[in-house]
Image 1 (cartoon, rainbow, N blue to C red):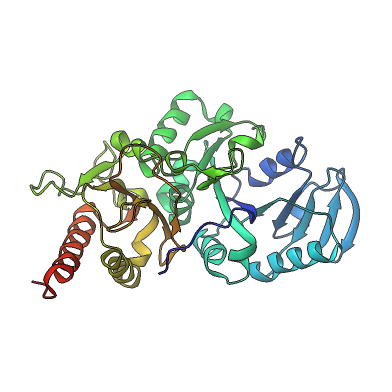
Image 2 (cartoon, rainbow, N blue to C red):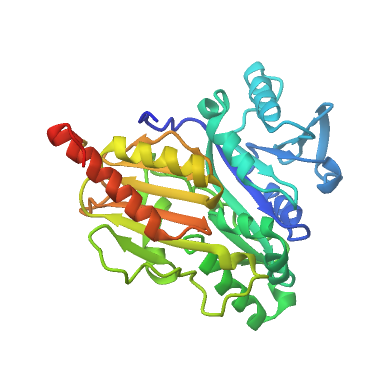
Length: 372
């Protein structure tokens, strides 16, 4: 992995995911009518799922329509890569209007990880598009049952930057609050918003990425939100050598139930007081993505690297690490490395100890050429 700077001019891309019947289409229809959404391109699976009758102005091509709101709607029946490439090429040729945001709506049974992998790794897409946010809709009425019986719904919630609790008015306050507590344990850093009929301001869903277009700068604290893990997850420090954190803490107060998929999910923050050697982190990342990649649902972090004055931001989804970004400066006086994890069947102790020992070995080699 080589360190690179963010290309902030790339098109912001939002992924809307959520289980069947959780309100993705209702949300999308509501978003497209809001002011400021006219320069948005939308990729969906089938036009029939979207209420286009009152919005449709004209069909540009077989799979692209222009809405009277100004939004471009594109049906993607197959390859996401080809769909995004076609949109970009048509915009470049002037065949469709300019757009400054893309929204991708997944199917209800979709694992969002492959979509995120595509946005993070395709050579063309990574130069033209940037992942801005993952928005997950959760049905307040049926969400608990879906989390219990469908691992896809757990993963959808775990990778979210924003969680929308839909149909809360039908579920009742007690049931909705219980589900919200469960979702916070799964994903402490994602704000949870109750939503009725898709009614939510678009700006609450966007600008969740590292780059903040409103300030044209990197907003590490808003992106990382490591403080959220102090209350709902587990924070592990490199200087802690006792075993008070060795237990398998899941962020739940209930007894483990094998039928609950989220009992296998943990969220925690690991903090390193001393600078980390880049070679040690790269080796650790390669080992864990190859051997336990399916367990690393999402990883975000800011690293204090040996011989570097500025921090480096890292981001991973399962087997794939996004190219790390060298930041212009530290966001605060706290220069510790902080890495937040959402994992499946993988506790913080093995992650902390493996990275700690790899870093010590690299440091020993750098000092005298012979690791222990």
